[in-house]
Length: 79
Image (cartoon, rainbow, N blue to C red; front, side, top):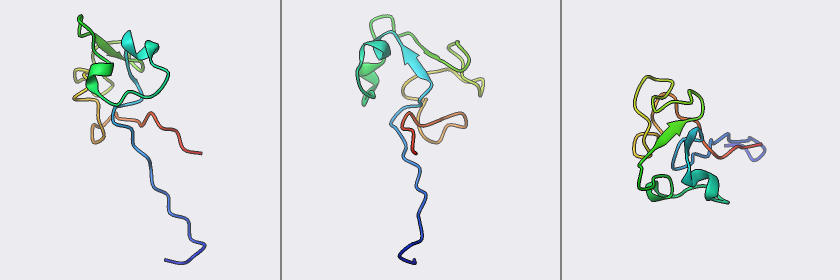
């Protein structure tokens, strides 16, 4: 690799950037565990669809909304 060649590595967050829950809005940082999303109601949703079903027509869940899922987008934005 040449010294001035830039390597574009995408930084992936543990959970999809579109995953939302009531607890999500109480955090002042990115969630690092599923417990930081789910509460006693266990209700999460996708902010893209505003539903419990994601853009890929599959159920939204912190354990499912991870890198590798077709509709996953990182919560970490690179410049």
